[in-house]
Image 1 (cartoon, rainbow, N blue to C red):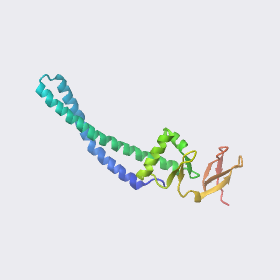
Image 2: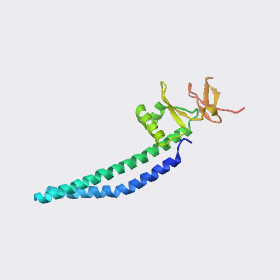
Image 3: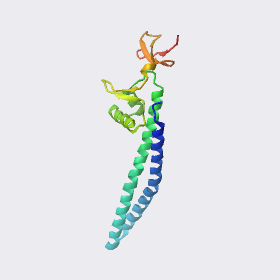
Image 4: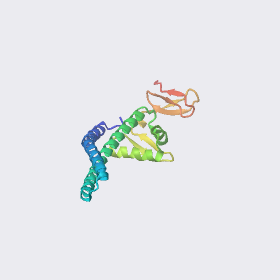
Length: 183
């Protein structure tokens, strides 16, 4: 398991509370702003316009504060969702090594942005039991997987491949299906 379910659940609870608190205030801020804005446009009395400007300022302040909380809560939900997607990819891996370039394509973002995203998930504790190895080609190493790897000879091209014991995989060289058969 590469996902810290406890961290994800806690984060989702906090995000839900933030969302429930911020949504009504954002709505109130939008309604207040629009009402005051249109009153301001139609008003000719300078004294009333001054009061409406203050009221507009309060509405903008409410919108900025609670809008920021709303955006933060949505980003937290999004990050937790991506962590779940990572976990699915990791659990289906056969050799314990995942190239950053391949996963960045799955997520549809540039490799350098993907590395920052992945690093953020590790720092927040959403993703566990893996780390980033920075070589010529950055890759994710799934911890404690090397003990479970076995060398399998490809039946098609004869190349040696490492896969998890008891699983099948794809040959790195000819892309044929390979499978570990216990003796």
